[in-house]
Image (tube, rainbow, N blue to C red):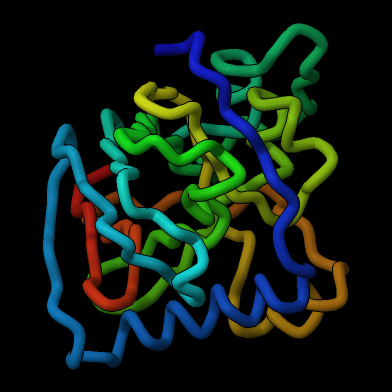
Length: 218
């Protein structure tokens, strides 16, 4: 329900988030010791305590459903999902992001400050392990203004026994091995000019103790 309140909480420093994001990418590409569950568009994925880097995310009772995935440009995203006052940028019309329509459900009695999902570490990777795409919290803040004060990382909490649907952009050019060091010091922004490659993608919702993936084509 759109009336359900989505709370955005500031997370760790950008250095930690950037390092974790690439570590997750490498672990995802190489690790085989964790059981893997695969889901598709429209499947309700119970997180069951699954996490990326820290079990304190406390995801028990939370589930996510990917309702759709679409390649879009920066300007398409702003025009479609931006709140009043969101501005397009001349020239940013290349399909450089993948926009996920995501429904987050909290079936527990836990309040948003007692549990949630570190959604900024959600990563999108091609099945061969190449092409890490990260949640673009800066662009997402055009649709979710509460993110504006936390442009690099955010976790989400949803009011108990409610659901919330949001539209999350992941940028094709936001993080690469070459730019990791620069991004860790806060110097790299998405340029929204690297086109999205058509094909199949794996969305990682958790890495441990079970890898939960949603696979889809764009």
